[in-house]
Length: 596
Image (cartoon, rainbow, N blue to C red):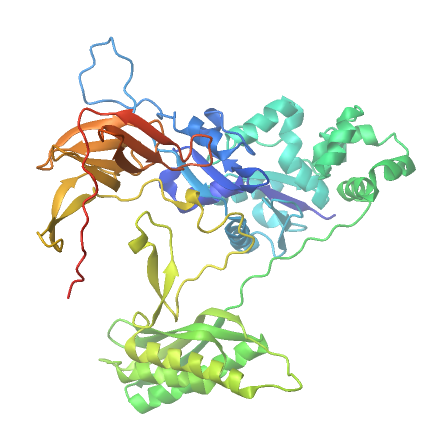
């Protein structure tokens, strides 16, 4: 009898983020994406759900709700006279762009890790993918039975800081349905939906074991599940609900021909797959291929020529394995085990995937020239830690070999220079999000750099929401320059410092010498005296303040420009005007002199 195990990871995007950043576990988390009507919520954590945040809600509305969160009561060191309520420590709202590609990649890694429980592991046919399918036919006795197997799998996932719902059935459809909807029969559909979403991001054991997971036959239980358990499109589920068909068992007495004519073949297909009348195949997730070769010496070897000859043979053997898989190495890792000292390790990187033994040997030879071995070597191992498919180009009738040759020569030049000068010396410029334009880039090595390949990005890479909510860990100092009589600018010196998280943006000077500074993400205008002493703050209704300016006939009208932080809103980009008690100065012309 076939037995399929379904492992559902509820709210996988949030679970993945919390697993990668455990410090976010207690914070309200909102993941957003580009929807038809602008930015909207793609997923949210338990804390955000309690604040009223819902999936598909406009991001601006969700941000407004999230900013009201003060976190649970925290004990205060100050004296409490009993009249005041418990003290609260504000927990910041974490907003991040949803990355479906990273979700899918991380789930595939979990699937590979699950090969310890079953040789056949795959991802469920759903969107978004949050479920793993394991073929455990004949495997349960190895764990001491199905119940013991479920407990071991659940315990293993808890050690990985992951919450999992387990369903065990005779078919893929039945196992998927039991994992997602078995408990709904006991509590009702509404309470089930609320529990699943409010538990988003939690890590911990289930309160009660799933009573359906231990049953050897699940056909009867499957008929009691809601109609959503058949993995049908939402439009069909909505139509069936309007017709009063709430459970899977409600479909059984109806004529199959009429169901097919009304709802299409997908309804009968899903029903037959769940009941075992129609086969369903698990799309296997393959483990990544490890390219590894090793040489064990019979006696320790100290001769440099022998070591080089062995490494060259290992490279040839590794390239043979790579070519069999039509794969080229991007980064090689060498390990030389010494007799009486620590192993010596070094790496060699490539700009493009390569399975050319002579090219890889030239790069390795450069590293060996600088290698100092204090003790004889007992073994040498070589592993390709990063590899990719070899680039192939179809032959053309009038092929320009010079273009291909020049491209390969450039790649070879980059490899040789990186090997000779070090990978940190040959870099490229990569754009990144930063509040300060002069820091909106970073240098990344051309060889061996960790470039994430994003697919199907749901947002533009340079939207306003990519501006970080927490810009700098340390306060930022305001710098001033002395202007000479001829208009030239002299050396700079520190004038004042904003508090933690404050970022100065536009500023203006008043007639009394005070400096009026826009705090980019503080929702205020900060006023400093001429000597840098803090005088007061002018609160602004919007959190992002970008610039200030004095205007009016008497220059006593302060204009405040706001931007967008946290999502589009009707008030984003508003210009406020208020009367102040001091007049501003007109703009003074200055001539900037380039530094030598």
